[in-house]
Image (cartoon, rainbow, N blue to C red; front, side, top):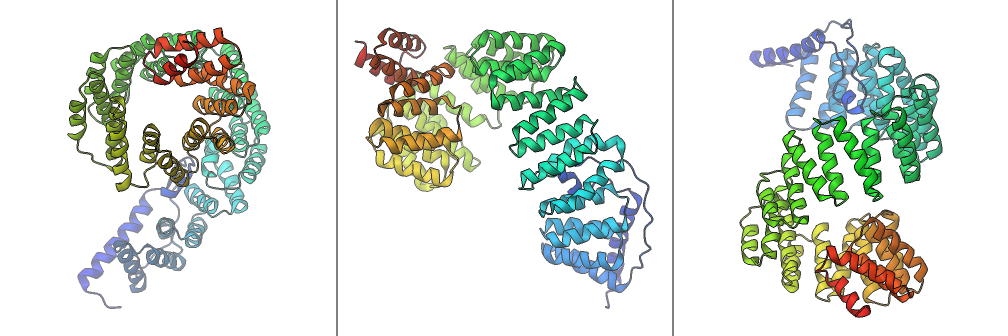
Amino acid sequence: MTLFPALHRALAASLVALLASCAQVPVEGGPQAAKSGAPAASAQPTPQLPPQDLTPEVLYEYLVAEMAIHRKEYNLAARAYVDLARKTRDPRIARRATDIAVYARQAALAVEAATIWLQAEPGSIPARQTLASILISSGALQDVRPHLEMLLSADPEHTAQVFLRMNAMLARHTDKPAVAKLVHELAQLYPKLPEAHLAAAQAYWNANQRDAALASASQALKLRPDWELAALFQAQMLQRRSVAESITFSREYLETHPAAKDIRMHLARMLAAERRTDEARREIDALVSAHPQNADIALTAGLLGIQMADWPLAEQQLKRALELNANGADTVRFYLGQVSEERKQPGEALRWYREVAGGEQYIPAQGRIAGILTKQGKLEEARALLHSIQPQTLQQRVQLTQAEAAILREAGAYKDAFDLLGEAVAKMPNTPDLLYDYAMAAEKVDRLDVLETSLRKLIELRPDHAHAYNALGYTLADRTERLQEAHDLIAHALKLSPEDPFIQDSMGWVLYRLGRIDEGRAYLEKAFKVRPDPEIAAHLGEVLWVQGKQDEARRVWQSTLRDHPGNETLQAVIKKYAQ
Protein backbone atom coordinates (compact mmCIF):
# COMPACT_ATOMS: atom_id res chain seq x y z
CA MET A 1 0.00 0.00 0.00
CA THR A 2 1.29 3.46 -0.89
CA LEU A 3 0.67 6.26 1.56
CA PHE A 4 1.47 9.95 1.48
CA PRO A 5 4.69 10.39 3.41
CA ALA A 6 3.17 12.77 6.00
CA LEU A 7 0.24 10.45 6.64
CA HIS A 8 2.57 7.48 6.83
CA ARG A 9 4.66 9.27 9.47
CA ALA A 10 1.54 10.28 11.44
CA LEU A 11 0.19 6.73 11.49
CA ALA A 12 3.52 5.32 12.47
CA ALA A 13 3.86 7.85 15.27
CA SER A 14 0.35 7.03 16.52
CA LEU A 15 0.99 3.29 16.58
CA VAL A 16 4.39 3.78 18.19
CA ALA A 17 2.70 5.87 20.87
CA LEU A 18 0.18 3.10 21.51
CA LEU A 19 2.88 0.49 21.87
CA ALA A 20 5.23 2.71 23.84
CA SER A 21 2.61 3.88 26.32
CA CYS A 22 1.60 0.32 27.05
CA ALA A 23 5.21 -0.78 27.36
CA GLN A 24 6.18 1.91 29.83
CA VAL A 25 3.31 1.46 32.30
CA PRO A 26 2.55 -1.95 33.86
CA VAL A 27 -1.03 -2.82 33.05
CA GLU A 28 -2.96 -2.82 36.34
CA GLY A 29 -6.63 -2.98 35.46
CA GLY A 30 -8.23 -1.91 32.22
CA PRO A 31 -11.79 -0.74 31.84
CA GLN A 32 -13.25 -4.22 31.76
CA ALA A 33 -11.33 -5.31 34.84
CA ALA A 34 -12.69 -2.31 36.69
CA LYS A 35 -16.23 -3.09 35.58
CA SER A 36 -15.92 -6.64 36.84
CA GLY A 37 -15.60 -5.43 40.40
CA ALA A 38 -12.30 -7.24 40.84
CA PRO A 39 -9.57 -5.55 42.88
CA ALA A 40 -6.75 -3.71 41.25
CA ALA A 41 -3.71 -5.87 40.87
CA SER A 42 -0.51 -5.18 42.71
CA ALA A 43 2.30 -3.71 40.66
CA GLN A 44 3.86 -6.20 38.28
CA PRO A 45 7.11 -6.11 36.40
CA THR A 46 6.87 -4.96 32.83
CA PRO A 47 6.51 -8.08 30.64
CA GLN A 48 8.88 -9.02 27.91
CA LEU A 49 7.28 -7.58 24.82
CA PRO A 50 7.67 -8.91 21.30
CA PRO A 51 9.49 -6.59 18.89
CA GLN A 52 7.10 -5.12 16.37
CA ASP A 53 8.14 -3.99 12.93
CA LEU A 54 5.93 -1.21 11.65
CA THR A 55 5.29 -2.93 8.34
CA PRO A 56 2.91 -1.49 5.75
CA GLU A 57 0.51 -4.35 6.52
CA VAL A 58 0.45 -3.56 10.27
CA LEU A 59 0.04 0.15 9.58
CA TYR A 60 -2.74 -0.49 7.11
CA GLU A 61 -4.76 -2.65 9.50
CA TYR A 62 -4.17 -0.14 12.26
CA LEU A 63 -5.44 2.60 9.93
CA VAL A 64 -8.58 0.58 9.12
CA ALA A 65 -9.29 0.01 12.82
CA GLU A 66 -8.74 3.59 13.94
CA MET A 67 -10.68 5.09 11.03
CA ALA A 68 -13.57 2.72 11.88
CA ILE A 69 -13.51 3.97 15.48
CA HIS A 70 -13.52 7.54 14.22
CA ARG A 71 -16.61 6.74 12.13
CA LYS A 72 -18.20 4.86 15.07
CA GLU A 73 -18.13 1.62 13.08
CA TYR A 74 -17.13 -0.36 16.16
CA ASN A 75 -17.85 -3.83 14.77
CA LEU A 76 -15.40 -3.23 11.91
CA ALA A 77 -12.87 -1.77 14.36
CA ALA A 78 -13.15 -4.81 16.62
CA ARG A 79 -12.61 -7.24 13.74
CA ALA A 80 -9.60 -5.30 12.47
CA TYR A 81 -7.99 -5.00 15.90
CA VAL A 82 -8.54 -8.68 16.76
CA ASP A 83 -7.03 -9.68 13.41
CA LEU A 84 -4.05 -7.44 14.21
CA ALA A 85 -3.74 -9.11 17.63
CA ARG A 86 -3.76 -12.56 16.00
CA LYS A 87 -0.92 -11.59 13.69
CA THR A 88 1.26 -9.72 16.18
CA ARG A 89 0.50 -11.66 19.43
CA ASP A 90 1.35 -8.38 21.14
CA PRO A 91 -0.36 -7.95 24.57
CA ARG A 92 -0.68 -4.20 24.06
CA ILE A 93 -2.60 -4.60 20.82
CA ALA A 94 -4.58 -7.53 22.26
CA ARG A 95 -5.64 -5.37 25.19
CA ARG A 96 -6.78 -2.61 22.84
CA ALA A 97 -8.62 -5.21 20.75
CA THR A 98 -10.35 -6.54 23.88
CA ASP A 99 -11.57 -3.10 24.90
CA ILE A 100 -12.95 -2.34 21.43
CA ALA A 101 -14.63 -5.75 21.09
CA VAL A 102 -16.29 -5.38 24.51
CA TYR A 103 -17.49 -1.88 23.61
CA ALA A 104 -18.88 -3.23 20.34
CA ARG A 105 -20.64 -6.06 22.23
CA GLN A 106 -18.83 -8.65 20.11
CA ALA A 107 -18.56 -11.38 22.74
CA ALA A 108 -16.72 -13.98 20.63
CA LEU A 109 -14.15 -11.45 19.46
CA ALA A 110 -13.74 -10.15 23.01
CA VAL A 111 -13.06 -13.65 24.33
CA GLU A 112 -10.53 -14.29 21.55
CA ALA A 113 -8.75 -10.97 22.09
CA ALA A 114 -8.61 -11.40 25.88
CA THR A 115 -7.33 -14.95 25.43
CA ILE A 116 -4.52 -13.69 23.16
CA TRP A 117 -3.75 -11.01 25.75
CA LEU A 118 -3.50 -13.60 28.53
CA GLN A 119 -1.44 -16.00 26.38
CA ALA A 120 0.96 -13.19 25.50
CA GLU A 121 1.11 -12.03 29.12
CA PRO A 122 0.32 -15.13 31.24
CA GLY A 123 1.18 -13.45 34.54
CA SER A 124 -1.16 -10.51 34.00
CA ILE A 125 -3.90 -10.34 36.62
CA PRO A 126 -5.79 -7.63 34.66
CA ALA A 127 -5.81 -9.88 31.59
CA ARG A 128 -7.21 -12.75 33.65
CA GLN A 129 -9.77 -10.47 35.33
CA THR A 130 -10.91 -9.17 31.98
CA LEU A 131 -11.23 -12.61 30.42
CA ALA A 132 -13.16 -13.86 33.48
CA SER A 133 -15.52 -10.88 33.27
CA ILE A 134 -16.18 -11.47 29.56
CA LEU A 135 -16.78 -15.20 30.10
CA ILE A 136 -19.22 -14.43 32.92
CA SER A 137 -21.12 -12.02 30.70
CA SER A 138 -21.24 -14.69 28.01
CA GLY A 139 -22.74 -17.18 30.44
CA ALA A 140 -19.77 -19.58 30.40
CA LEU A 141 -19.63 -20.05 34.17
CA GLN A 142 -17.58 -23.25 34.19
CA ASP A 143 -14.94 -21.66 31.98
CA VAL A 144 -14.58 -18.91 34.57
CA ARG A 145 -13.59 -21.17 37.46
CA PRO A 146 -9.88 -21.65 36.61
CA HIS A 147 -9.46 -17.91 36.18
CA LEU A 148 -11.11 -17.20 39.55
CA GLU A 149 -8.90 -19.83 41.18
CA MET A 150 -5.86 -18.17 39.65
CA LEU A 151 -7.01 -14.73 40.81
CA LEU A 152 -7.48 -16.03 44.35
CA SER A 153 -4.08 -17.69 44.49
CA ALA A 154 -2.04 -15.18 42.49
CA ASP A 155 -1.53 -12.73 45.33
CA PRO A 156 -2.32 -14.00 48.87
CA GLU A 157 -2.45 -10.45 50.18
CA HIS A 158 -5.43 -9.74 47.91
CA THR A 159 -7.31 -13.04 48.23
CA ALA A 160 -9.75 -11.61 50.77
CA GLN A 161 -10.51 -8.63 48.52
CA VAL A 162 -11.15 -10.92 45.55
CA PHE A 163 -13.72 -12.82 47.63
CA LEU A 164 -15.40 -9.59 48.76
CA ARG A 165 -15.83 -8.53 45.14
CA MET A 166 -16.59 -11.92 43.69
CA ASN A 167 -20.37 -11.59 43.76
CA ALA A 168 -20.13 -8.27 41.94
CA MET A 169 -18.04 -10.00 39.28
CA LEU A 170 -20.65 -12.76 38.96
CA ALA A 171 -23.73 -10.54 39.25
CA ARG A 172 -24.59 -10.69 35.53
CA HIS A 173 -24.89 -14.45 35.52
CA THR A 174 -28.55 -15.43 35.65
CA ASP A 175 -28.17 -18.94 37.10
CA LYS A 176 -27.91 -17.89 40.76
CA PRO A 177 -27.86 -21.44 42.22
CA ALA A 178 -24.95 -22.30 39.91
CA VAL A 179 -23.14 -19.15 41.04
CA ALA A 180 -23.76 -20.08 44.68
CA LYS A 181 -22.35 -23.56 44.09
CA LEU A 182 -19.25 -22.14 42.41
CA VAL A 183 -18.59 -19.54 45.14
CA HIS A 184 -19.16 -22.16 47.85
CA GLU A 185 -16.65 -24.53 46.21
CA LEU A 186 -14.09 -21.74 45.92
CA ALA A 187 -14.69 -20.75 49.54
CA GLN A 188 -13.99 -24.33 50.63
CA LEU A 189 -10.44 -23.87 49.37
CA TYR A 190 -9.97 -21.16 52.04
CA PRO A 191 -11.84 -22.52 55.10
CA LYS A 192 -10.16 -20.15 57.59
CA LEU A 193 -10.78 -16.97 55.59
CA PRO A 194 -13.86 -15.05 56.85
CA GLU A 195 -14.24 -13.21 53.55
CA ALA A 196 -14.63 -16.55 51.74
CA HIS A 197 -17.56 -17.54 53.95
CA LEU A 198 -19.19 -14.12 53.60
CA ALA A 199 -18.90 -14.35 49.80
CA ALA A 200 -20.60 -17.76 49.96
CA ALA A 201 -23.32 -16.28 52.20
CA GLN A 202 -24.00 -13.49 49.71
CA ALA A 203 -24.13 -15.93 46.80
CA TYR A 204 -26.51 -18.23 48.68
CA TRP A 205 -28.73 -15.28 49.55
CA ASN A 206 -28.87 -14.18 45.91
CA ALA A 207 -29.90 -17.74 45.03
CA ASN A 208 -32.70 -17.62 47.63
CA GLN A 209 -30.98 -20.33 49.71
CA ARG A 210 -31.59 -18.57 53.00
CA ASP A 211 -30.55 -21.24 55.52
CA ALA A 212 -27.23 -21.83 53.75
CA ALA A 213 -26.65 -18.06 53.60
CA LEU A 214 -27.19 -17.69 57.36
CA ALA A 215 -24.92 -20.64 58.09
CA SER A 216 -22.09 -19.20 55.98
CA ALA A 217 -22.48 -15.72 57.52
CA SER A 218 -22.39 -17.27 61.00
CA GLN A 219 -19.17 -19.05 60.09
CA ALA A 220 -17.62 -15.79 58.92
CA LEU A 221 -18.53 -14.19 62.26
CA LYS A 222 -17.20 -17.17 64.16
CA LEU A 223 -13.85 -16.72 62.47
CA ARG A 224 -13.88 -12.94 63.03
CA PRO A 225 -16.36 -12.00 65.79
CA ASP A 226 -15.68 -8.26 65.56
CA TRP A 227 -16.34 -8.03 61.80
CA GLU A 228 -19.27 -5.62 61.62
CA LEU A 229 -19.79 -6.09 57.89
CA ALA A 230 -20.61 -9.77 58.41
CA ALA A 231 -22.75 -8.98 61.45
CA LEU A 232 -24.74 -6.39 59.51
CA PHE A 233 -25.32 -8.79 56.63
CA GLN A 234 -26.58 -11.41 59.06
CA ALA A 235 -28.86 -8.88 60.77
CA GLN A 236 -30.32 -7.85 57.42
CA MET A 237 -30.90 -11.46 56.41
CA LEU A 238 -32.64 -12.19 59.70
CA GLN A 239 -34.81 -9.13 59.24
CA ARG A 240 -36.24 -10.60 56.03
CA ARG A 241 -37.22 -13.71 57.99
CA SER A 242 -38.26 -12.12 61.27
CA VAL A 243 -37.83 -8.56 62.51
CA ALA A 244 -37.90 -9.85 66.10
CA GLU A 245 -35.00 -12.22 65.37
CA SER A 246 -32.98 -9.42 63.79
CA ILE A 247 -33.62 -7.11 66.75
CA THR A 248 -32.53 -9.84 69.19
CA PHE A 249 -29.39 -10.60 67.19
CA SER A 250 -28.48 -6.91 66.91
CA ARG A 251 -28.94 -6.32 70.64
CA GLU A 252 -26.80 -9.33 71.51
CA TYR A 253 -24.08 -8.21 69.12
CA LEU A 254 -24.08 -4.72 70.60
CA GLU A 255 -23.65 -6.14 74.10
CA THR A 256 -20.20 -7.42 73.12
CA HIS A 257 -19.46 -4.81 70.43
CA PRO A 258 -21.01 -1.54 71.68
CA ALA A 259 -19.05 0.57 69.17
CA ALA A 260 -20.66 -1.20 66.17
CA LYS A 261 -22.12 1.93 64.55
CA ASP A 262 -23.82 0.31 61.57
CA ILE A 263 -25.47 -2.39 63.68
CA ARG A 264 -26.83 0.22 66.09
CA MET A 265 -28.13 2.28 63.17
CA HIS A 266 -29.80 -0.81 61.72
CA LEU A 267 -31.37 -1.55 65.11
CA ALA A 268 -32.67 2.02 65.43
CA ARG A 269 -34.26 1.81 61.97
CA MET A 270 -36.00 -1.47 62.80
CA LEU A 271 -37.30 -0.16 66.13
CA ALA A 272 -38.58 3.00 64.45
CA ALA A 273 -40.32 0.96 61.75
CA GLU A 274 -41.93 -1.15 64.47
CA ARG A 275 -43.06 2.07 66.20
CA ARG A 276 -41.09 1.18 69.31
CA THR A 277 -40.21 4.83 69.52
CA ASP A 278 -38.78 5.01 73.03
CA GLU A 279 -36.35 2.19 72.28
CA ALA A 280 -35.48 3.72 68.91
CA ARG A 281 -34.73 7.08 70.55
CA ARG A 282 -32.35 5.43 73.00
CA GLU A 283 -30.36 3.91 70.16
CA ILE A 284 -30.39 7.21 68.26
CA ASP A 285 -29.17 9.07 71.35
CA ALA A 286 -26.37 6.54 71.76
CA LEU A 287 -25.33 6.99 68.13
CA VAL A 288 -25.34 10.78 68.31
CA SER A 289 -23.44 10.81 71.62
CA ALA A 290 -20.79 8.46 70.29
CA HIS A 291 -20.38 10.35 66.98
CA PRO A 292 -21.18 14.02 67.66
CA GLN A 293 -19.33 15.27 64.57
CA ASN A 294 -20.68 12.70 62.12
CA ALA A 295 -22.96 14.45 59.62
CA ASP A 296 -24.31 11.18 58.20
CA ILE A 297 -25.46 10.03 61.62
CA ALA A 298 -27.09 13.40 62.31
CA LEU A 299 -28.94 13.13 58.98
CA THR A 300 -30.01 9.54 59.68
CA ALA A 301 -31.22 10.55 63.15
CA GLY A 302 -33.22 13.37 61.60
CA LEU A 303 -34.84 11.07 59.06
CA LEU A 304 -35.70 8.57 61.78
CA GLY A 305 -37.28 11.45 63.69
CA ILE A 306 -39.48 12.12 60.66
CA GLN A 307 -40.35 8.42 60.41
CA MET A 308 -41.39 8.39 64.07
CA ALA A 309 -43.19 11.75 63.81
CA ASP A 310 -40.85 13.05 66.51
CA TRP A 311 -40.65 16.53 65.03
CA PRO A 312 -38.41 18.13 67.69
CA LEU A 313 -35.86 15.31 67.25
CA ALA A 314 -36.09 15.56 63.47
CA GLU A 315 -35.58 19.33 63.46
CA GLN A 316 -32.69 19.24 65.93
CA GLN A 317 -30.76 16.55 64.06
CA LEU A 318 -31.41 17.91 60.58
CA LYS A 319 -30.13 21.31 61.67
CA ARG A 320 -27.04 19.58 63.11
CA ALA A 321 -26.55 17.82 59.78
CA LEU A 322 -26.54 21.21 58.05
CA GLU A 323 -24.07 22.61 60.57
CA LEU A 324 -21.80 19.60 59.99
CA ASN A 325 -21.93 20.16 56.20
CA ALA A 326 -23.82 17.00 55.36
CA ASN A 327 -23.88 16.01 51.71
CA GLY A 328 -27.03 17.15 49.92
CA ALA A 329 -27.68 20.34 51.89
CA ASP A 330 -30.66 21.23 49.67
CA THR A 331 -32.27 17.88 50.47
CA VAL A 332 -31.77 18.52 54.19
CA ARG A 333 -33.42 21.94 53.82
CA PHE A 334 -36.34 20.27 52.03
CA TYR A 335 -36.79 17.85 54.93
CA LEU A 336 -36.64 20.75 57.38
CA GLY A 337 -39.42 22.41 55.41
CA GLN A 338 -41.52 19.26 55.76
CA VAL A 339 -40.86 19.15 59.50
CA SER A 340 -41.91 22.80 59.86
CA GLU A 341 -45.13 22.03 57.99
CA GLU A 342 -45.86 19.15 60.36
CA ARG A 343 -45.23 21.47 63.30
CA LYS A 344 -47.81 23.91 61.89
CA GLN A 345 -45.14 26.54 61.16
CA PRO A 346 -45.91 27.57 57.56
CA GLY A 347 -43.70 30.67 57.66
CA GLU A 348 -40.69 28.62 58.75
CA ALA A 349 -41.51 25.97 56.16
CA LEU A 350 -41.60 28.59 53.41
CA ARG A 351 -38.20 29.86 54.52
CA TRP A 352 -36.64 26.41 54.28
CA TYR A 353 -38.23 25.58 50.94
CA ARG A 354 -37.11 28.90 49.46
CA GLU A 355 -33.53 28.10 50.51
CA VAL A 356 -33.52 24.98 48.32
CA ALA A 357 -31.33 26.36 45.56
CA GLY A 358 -31.17 23.44 43.14
CA GLY A 359 -30.81 19.72 42.72
CA GLU A 360 -33.49 17.05 42.68
CA GLN A 361 -35.50 18.72 45.44
CA TYR A 362 -35.83 22.12 43.75
CA ILE A 363 -39.07 21.42 41.87
CA PRO A 364 -40.65 19.50 44.79
CA ALA A 365 -39.76 22.45 47.06
CA GLN A 366 -41.52 24.86 44.70
CA GLY A 367 -44.50 22.53 44.77
CA ARG A 368 -44.57 22.64 48.58
CA ILE A 369 -44.36 26.43 48.51
CA ALA A 370 -47.33 26.45 46.15
CA GLY A 371 -49.17 24.09 48.49
CA ILE A 372 -48.68 26.39 51.48
CA LEU A 373 -49.80 29.41 49.47
CA THR A 374 -52.92 27.48 48.43
CA LYS A 375 -53.76 26.71 52.06
CA GLN A 376 -53.45 30.43 52.73
CA GLY A 377 -56.07 31.11 50.08
CA LYS A 378 -53.56 32.26 47.44
CA LEU A 379 -54.32 29.72 44.70
CA GLU A 380 -53.64 32.07 41.79
CA GLU A 381 -50.33 33.15 43.30
CA ALA A 382 -49.42 29.50 43.76
CA ARG A 383 -50.26 28.64 40.15
CA ALA A 384 -48.33 31.67 38.91
CA LEU A 385 -45.28 30.46 40.85
CA LEU A 386 -45.41 27.06 39.18
CA HIS A 387 -46.03 28.56 35.74
CA SER A 388 -42.97 30.80 36.14
CA ILE A 389 -40.62 27.82 36.33
CA GLN A 390 -39.13 26.65 33.04
CA PRO A 391 -38.70 22.88 33.16
CA GLN A 392 -35.35 21.63 31.91
CA THR A 393 -36.29 17.96 31.59
CA LEU A 394 -39.32 15.77 31.01
CA GLN A 395 -39.20 14.75 34.66
CA GLN A 396 -39.40 18.38 35.78
CA ARG A 397 -42.36 18.98 33.46
CA VAL A 398 -44.13 16.01 35.02
CA GLN A 399 -43.31 17.21 38.54
CA LEU A 400 -44.68 20.69 37.83
CA THR A 401 -47.90 19.22 36.41
CA GLN A 402 -48.28 17.00 39.48
CA ALA A 403 -47.67 19.97 41.78
CA GLU A 404 -50.30 22.09 40.05
CA ALA A 405 -52.82 19.25 40.13
CA ALA A 406 -52.11 18.81 43.85
CA ILE A 407 -52.87 22.44 44.70
CA LEU A 408 -56.04 22.31 42.64
CA ARG A 409 -57.16 19.29 44.65
CA GLU A 410 -56.19 21.13 47.85
CA ALA A 411 -58.46 23.99 46.77
CA GLY A 412 -61.30 21.56 46.00
CA ALA A 413 -61.07 22.23 42.25
CA TYR A 414 -61.28 18.52 41.39
CA LYS A 415 -62.58 19.01 37.85
CA ASP A 416 -59.77 21.46 37.06
CA ALA A 417 -57.19 18.98 38.38
CA PHE A 418 -58.76 16.20 36.30
CA ASP A 419 -58.71 18.33 33.14
CA LEU A 420 -55.11 19.47 33.72
CA LEU A 421 -53.88 15.90 34.14
CA GLY A 422 -55.91 14.74 31.17
CA GLU A 423 -54.19 17.27 28.94
CA ALA A 424 -50.79 16.21 30.28
CA VAL A 425 -51.52 12.52 29.69
CA ALA A 426 -52.61 13.30 26.14
CA LYS A 427 -49.18 14.85 25.52
CA MET A 428 -47.19 12.30 27.53
CA PRO A 429 -49.33 9.13 27.36
CA ASN A 430 -46.76 6.65 28.65
CA THR A 431 -45.72 8.50 31.80
CA PRO A 432 -46.45 6.28 34.84
CA ASP A 433 -46.63 9.08 37.43
CA LEU A 434 -49.09 11.09 35.36
CA LEU A 435 -51.27 8.05 34.68
CA TYR A 436 -51.48 7.31 38.39
CA ASP A 437 -52.36 10.88 39.33
CA TYR A 438 -54.88 11.07 36.48
CA ALA A 439 -56.57 7.94 37.81
CA MET A 440 -56.77 9.40 41.32
CA ALA A 441 -58.20 12.64 39.92
CA ALA A 442 -60.76 10.64 37.94
CA GLU A 443 -62.01 9.02 41.15
CA LYS A 444 -62.72 12.45 42.61
CA VAL A 445 -65.02 13.36 39.71
CA ASP A 446 -66.68 9.90 39.52
CA ARG A 447 -65.00 8.96 36.24
CA LEU A 448 -64.33 5.36 37.25
CA ASP A 449 -64.01 4.43 33.58
CA VAL A 450 -61.01 6.76 33.21
CA LEU A 451 -59.59 5.52 36.51
CA GLU A 452 -59.72 1.90 35.41
CA THR A 453 -58.38 2.59 31.90
CA SER A 454 -55.47 4.65 33.28
CA LEU A 455 -54.51 2.15 35.96
CA ARG A 456 -54.67 -0.82 33.58
CA LYS A 457 -52.42 1.02 31.15
CA LEU A 458 -50.05 1.80 34.04
CA ILE A 459 -50.01 -1.88 34.99
CA GLU A 460 -49.20 -2.74 31.38
CA LEU A 461 -46.29 -0.28 31.41
CA ARG A 462 -45.13 -1.18 34.92
CA PRO A 463 -46.17 -4.72 35.89
CA ASP A 464 -44.37 -4.28 39.23
CA HIS A 465 -46.29 -1.11 40.22
CA ALA A 466 -47.88 -2.33 43.45
CA HIS A 467 -49.87 0.85 44.04
CA ALA A 468 -51.51 0.66 40.62
CA TYR A 469 -52.92 -2.79 41.47
CA ASN A 470 -53.83 -1.54 44.93
CA ALA A 471 -55.59 1.62 43.73
CA LEU A 472 -57.65 -0.27 41.18
CA GLY A 473 -58.47 -3.05 43.63
CA TYR A 474 -59.43 -0.66 46.42
CA THR A 475 -61.66 1.41 44.13
CA LEU A 476 -63.46 -1.70 42.90
CA ALA A 477 -63.88 -2.86 46.50
CA ASP A 478 -65.14 0.51 47.73
CA ARG A 479 -67.22 1.71 44.79
CA THR A 480 -68.46 -1.44 43.00
CA GLU A 481 -69.63 -5.00 43.65
CA ARG A 482 -66.69 -6.53 41.74
CA LEU A 483 -65.32 -7.73 45.05
CA GLN A 484 -63.52 -10.92 44.02
CA GLU A 485 -61.73 -9.09 41.21
CA ALA A 486 -60.83 -6.37 43.72
CA HIS A 487 -59.48 -8.99 46.14
CA ASP A 488 -57.30 -10.57 43.47
CA LEU A 489 -55.82 -7.21 42.46
CA ILE A 490 -55.06 -6.24 46.06
CA ALA A 491 -53.61 -9.69 46.76
CA HIS A 492 -51.20 -9.19 43.85
CA ALA A 493 -50.28 -5.75 45.17
CA LEU A 494 -49.64 -7.26 48.60
CA LYS A 495 -47.40 -9.89 47.04
CA LEU A 496 -45.36 -7.13 45.39
CA SER A 497 -45.18 -5.02 48.58
CA PRO A 498 -46.17 -7.13 51.61
CA GLU A 499 -45.23 -4.57 54.28
CA ASP A 500 -47.03 -1.56 52.81
CA PRO A 501 -49.67 -0.43 55.35
CA PHE A 502 -51.89 1.16 52.70
CA ILE A 503 -52.09 -2.10 50.76
CA GLN A 504 -52.75 -3.96 54.03
CA ASP A 505 -55.56 -1.46 54.64
CA SER A 506 -57.03 -2.23 51.21
CA MET A 507 -56.88 -5.96 51.90
CA GLY A 508 -58.61 -5.44 55.22
CA TRP A 509 -61.32 -3.38 53.56
CA VAL A 510 -62.04 -5.82 50.73
CA LEU A 511 -62.17 -8.74 53.18
CA TYR A 512 -64.66 -6.77 55.26
CA ARG A 513 -66.74 -6.11 52.15
CA LEU A 514 -66.61 -9.83 51.34
CA GLY A 515 -68.00 -10.62 54.78
CA ARG A 516 -64.71 -11.97 56.16
CA ILE A 517 -64.78 -9.44 58.97
CA ASP A 518 -62.33 -10.98 61.44
CA GLU A 519 -59.69 -11.44 58.72
CA GLY A 520 -60.25 -7.90 57.54
CA ARG A 521 -59.90 -6.47 61.04
CA ALA A 522 -56.54 -8.23 61.49
CA TYR A 523 -55.15 -6.55 58.37
CA LEU A 524 -56.56 -3.16 59.38
CA GLU A 525 -55.10 -3.36 62.88
CA LYS A 526 -51.71 -4.29 61.47
CA ALA A 527 -51.83 -1.38 59.02
CA PHE A 528 -52.98 1.11 61.66
CA LYS A 529 -50.20 0.04 64.06
CA VAL A 530 -47.58 0.89 61.44
CA ARG A 531 -49.31 3.93 59.95
CA PRO A 532 -52.10 5.65 61.95
CA ASP A 533 -53.44 7.30 58.81
CA PRO A 534 -56.95 8.85 58.98
CA GLU A 535 -58.35 6.70 56.16
CA ILE A 536 -57.01 3.53 57.77
CA ALA A 537 -58.53 4.75 61.05
CA ALA A 538 -61.87 5.27 59.29
CA HIS A 539 -61.88 1.69 57.99
CA LEU A 540 -60.70 0.11 61.23
CA GLY A 541 -63.24 2.08 63.26
CA GLU A 542 -66.08 1.03 60.97
CA VAL A 543 -65.15 -2.64 61.26
CA LEU A 544 -64.88 -2.37 65.05
CA TRP A 545 -68.26 -0.63 65.18
CA VAL A 546 -69.93 -3.34 63.09
CA GLN A 547 -68.44 -5.96 65.43
CA GLY A 548 -70.05 -4.23 68.39
CA LYS A 549 -66.86 -2.64 69.70
CA GLN A 550 -68.13 0.93 69.61
CA ASP A 551 -65.89 2.24 72.41
CA GLU A 552 -62.77 0.96 70.63
CA ALA A 553 -63.99 2.48 67.37
CA ARG A 554 -64.49 5.87 69.01
CA ARG A 555 -60.99 5.75 70.52
CA VAL A 556 -59.45 5.02 67.13
CA TRP A 557 -61.41 7.81 65.45
CA GLN A 558 -60.91 10.46 68.11
CA SER A 559 -57.19 9.82 68.58
CA THR A 560 -56.66 10.16 64.83
CA LEU A 561 -59.00 13.13 64.46
CA ARG A 562 -56.82 15.18 66.83
CA ASP A 563 -53.93 15.01 64.34
CA HIS A 564 -56.10 15.19 61.18
CA PRO A 565 -59.09 17.39 62.03
CA GLY A 566 -59.90 18.23 58.41
CA ASN A 567 -59.89 14.73 56.90
CA GLU A 568 -63.12 14.28 54.97
CA THR A 569 -63.14 10.47 55.04
CA LEU A 570 -62.68 10.31 58.79
CA GLN A 571 -65.30 12.99 59.44
CA ALA A 572 -67.79 11.19 57.17
CA VAL A 573 -67.48 7.85 58.95
CA ILE A 574 -67.78 9.47 62.37
CA LYS A 575 -70.91 11.28 61.20
CA LYS A 576 -72.31 8.05 59.82
CA TYR A 577 -71.85 5.96 62.97
CA ALA A 578 -71.03 8.06 66.03
CA GLN A 579 -73.42 11.00 65.74
